[in-house]
Amino acid sequence: MSTDTATENPGTADAPSPGVAAPGTSPTGHRRLLTRRDRLTLALMAGVPTVLHVALVWLTALASIALAFTTWDGIGFDSIQWVGLHNFTELFTNNPQFWPAVEHNVIWFVVLIVLPTPFGLFLAVQLDKRIRFSRVYQTAYFLPVVMSLAVVGFVWQLVYNPDTGLINSVIGANRPGHYIDWIGDPDLNLWAVLVAASWRHTGYMMILYLAGLKSVDPSLREASALDGANEWQTFRNVVFPTLRPTNTVVLVVTIIEALRAFDLVFVFNKGAQGTELLSILVTNNIIGESSRIGYGSAIAVVLLVISLAVIIPYLIATFRKERRV
Image 1 (cartoon, rainbow, N blue to C red):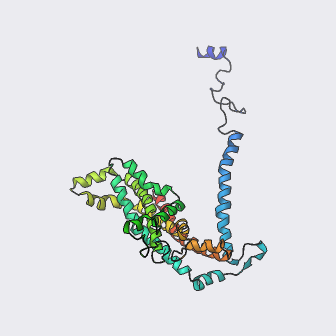
Image 2 (cartoon, rainbow, N blue to C red):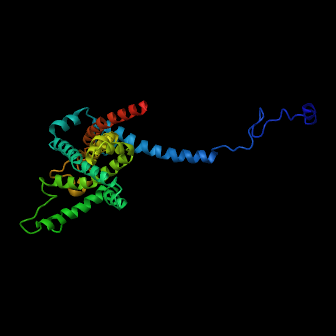
């Protein structure tokens, strides 16, 4: 029976199955996953951002490192002169603003760690309890983070206004002879700016910790409750240790925020009279009246080195953890 069938339909046994191309022929019934137009679109979408990133970030960073060893007034490339380590020597020994700026950046970091970070954790713990209107509270606390630091600076300028500001009006310091100049007083302006920065940083920390709390296994809390632990003991002994990765991210983010602080101070008083920061010194030397681009680049390199000293260990620890997993 099988012999007759094979005889009546010659070539049936050797015919390729549907969807399988015969040797030496191109596949039929299938289209290419990416057409020429798709490849061109993909190349533009990936290539243009890559070129812009390399040109605006990496090339400028390398140029700043090279210019840190030169003197240049920004007028013509022929005026660039190599001076070696002279800019760094002058920066560390003869600049009366450098070490106060470093001190202010350190104070900025300490304040952000001590005040808004624990308060952000407290808000995250409360919101994690799924209280009523938690979404409204999250939006309200996170709103300052969405606003730019320049806008935050303008808002707090109104709050600190000596005549009509909220603080002076509440404490009665808006009368002649009783004025408190929160922005102009060198003993107060740094702390006034830090209050505004903490107001914004609290919402940032709240969101980071809230994301970390959402990843905590509920069974750990249930087991702790069955063992008789109260809410504080559960948080201290069970929940907080599981937030170690979040704490690492919070630490790195806070250090970066302390080093890149610029907008808020510049809006307040352009970094003068007790609010000097490294970023302010970079700006004043590069785009100021003196146009000491080489000297300003040297300050930027110092800021870059400090940032890398924090970021590189964090990246190494992260990559090691991923390899173990």
